[in-house]
Length: 275
Ligand SMILES: NC(=O)c1ccc[n+]([C@@H]2O[C@H](COP(=O)([O-])OP(=O)(O)OC[C@H]3O[C@@H](n4cnc5c(N)ncnc54)[C@H](OP(=O)(O)O)[C@@H]3O)[C@@H](O)[C@H]2O)c1
Image (cartoon, rainbow, N blue to C red; front, top):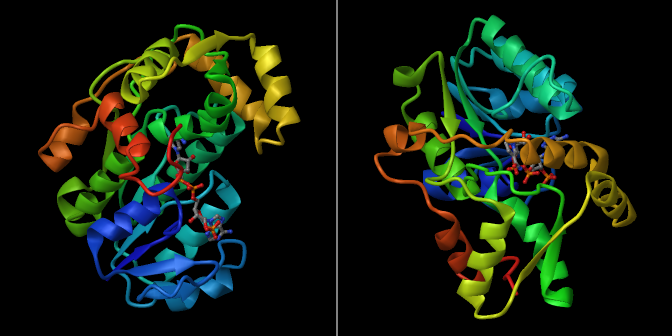
């Protein structure tokens, strides 16, 4: 029995679609078969979801107290293998709080005695969807990543890798897989490809980290400070790496930026449709 958490989120919803009938932990029921209602913040609500589970696919916010509580309940229920989505820069001394949180969870999992497999993805292409309103309104987007090159991955491919691992975890025990797309891209490349796919000009307006932080705060973006920190790191090359691990896991090439933009602009992906 597989249990998927974070099943309503970006990676989780696609993973569940790929896995077919599977048990999911949800805070709010959607009516999909296999749902068990529970909340990371209330570990006693996790028991019904974890009963009889061999493999836990742990996806959720980078909040160590929450995920550590889930891991402790999973161990108590005899879960044998945990496949977890972490971050590609999850280090205990990271300047970014959520990356330190991921590092704490990874360390707890590794010390738990349960078998584990970690998926450590680079920047998600789906983060670009947040730029859509600004592109629609102004014909471009602002960003503080300069000309930093990033091995962006389509979150649907993170889900594809997660689905393979959850189905046959034993052969991947103890492994950490680094996940990227097929190419290094800059935000200037994003603007150019976006324009090419839509046939309309899209401008990339370079702004400073301070301006970016202020804009994120003004727009009420959660974790605005951490996001600005990450953009600053990306400008310095934090995401400028590629890996073949996705192809090794799934046997196919990962989606590139153009395929991602084409699917979202063309409406193949439900929401949001890019302008
Ligand atoms: N974005 C990136 O570039 C990037 C890069 C590398 C790694 N990551 C990591 O990828 C992971 C998640 O990815 P995602 O984009 O799929 O996340 P997401 O879309 O934000 O989804 C989060 C999921 O967690 C659930 N959740 C939140 N709080 C919960 C709680 N208290 N109890 C139970 N479930 C809860 C949400 O359920 P509700 O529907 O109830 O809210 C939702 O299903 C994160 O750990 C993130 O750090 C992201």
